[in-house]
Amino acid sequence: MHIPPIRTPSPRSNGAKLQRRYSNDNGYVDNPIENSSTQAALATASDKVKHALKGVDLTHIRPTQLAKLASTLFAEGQISCISLGTMMVQQVDGDAPINVLQVFQRQRAALQSMKGLSFFKESNAGYAEVEATTSKLADFIRALTSSAGVDVRA
Image (tube, rainbow, N blue to C red; front, side, top):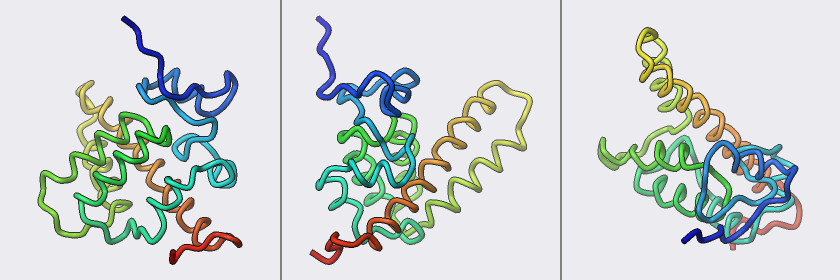
């Protein structure tokens, strides 16, 4: 029995484009952070997403916090399963704070040096997407904390 997603993005939206590439049983919003401009994602993000991201510092975050954040963003239709999985797996190296932006850059650089094998090519492509997603998350957080009318200390 097929159970439809919780939400369905508009047919020509950025969320629909992401849905065609990666499934998400929860569905995607029209302007997911992973696949939209910062302004579009910020304008349409739910209060739950804004609350989850306020005060987050991606340059100093514990892997358990990153995993929880990724779970929330996936459930809210903001990121793909590729981003979710890659962010979740960071917990295997312990829970000392990490700079997520640098971690994904280093991991992708390491995979680029192993060019011959298809697994590494696919993994490199996945890390490139996650690296772009974390960069968009950082932009979203900066815009969220600087936007008028949003109380980031509440």
